[in-house]
Length: 115
Image (cartoon, rainbow, N blue to C red):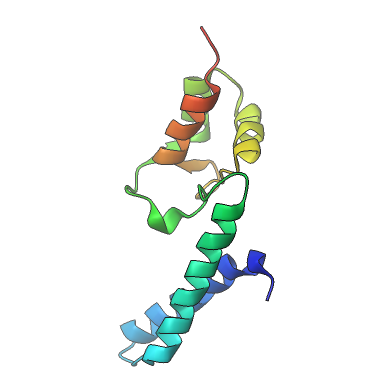
């Protein structure tokens, strides 16, 4: 299996296991172990990336979100340029127009334009 598919596959299987548990079904321990191995493979693949593992929203220390407009204001650039900077750093949005606060702080630390 290509390492690049480990994260989306892990997300789908994790969601299915959570759904099964919510509906009162048991999930076999060996299945849970396999799902955890996919998570580990995704982390290893992303850590090996030159951009690090900044794109794993499930491991974030907080749920705070920052809009693209707010981030652009903090960086002193346009919203479109925020997307370019984020792509260069390997940072992805958690939703359309929304960024994890930790990723926004990382972009500000590394790319803020001097006033």
